[in-house]
Length: 192
Ligand code: PAN
Ligand code: ZN
Image 1 (cartoon, rainbow, N blue to C red):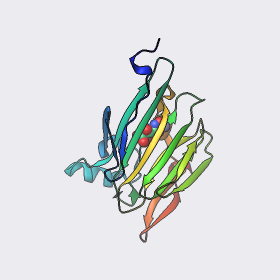
Image 2 (image 1 turned 135 degrees about the vertical axis):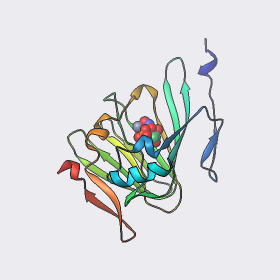
Image 3 (image 1 turned 45 degrees about the horizontal axis):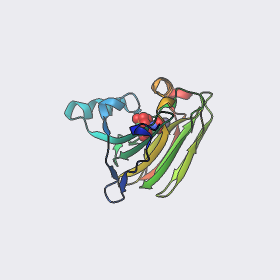
């Protein structure tokens, strides 16, 4: 016997707005949620003294059946910098060590940063249409280096879990900073 959640379901993605419908849950991440992530702490404090700007929105749709827990997430990462560091997602590693993820960049340009717990680092250049596989045990963060919204679709299992602690502790090996108008990788002082 199938129960109600075991039937196929579709949502409609709108390429103009970068959203889909119907959406179940929306989460906003503001600068105050990411203040530990940006390297220029005086700049973070001075922005927060005036306002708490939105950095990205996440739109989720869980597809939980009686035997699976696949989820869809669409992240809309606003353009901009905090000091000289581009807007980025917080970044996390999955709690379960057997859980990969697919990211599909549908709009904008930037980088997917990946890192293992031992500090092995990769940066995947993203343009609209890039699809990346994130293997298990690689922390992942997306950085928007363009002047427009960067939108990407994520597909993962809810039971993967999200661990933000390693990123809060040490961050990624490289910072992506704007230097003379160009995205430039710089060694993170927290790793040297
Ligand atoms: C994504 C991310 C989403 C937001 O759905 O959760 O892009 O990034 P942070 O979780 O790092 O704030 C995902 O990777 N899920 O596993
Ligand atoms: Zn993830």
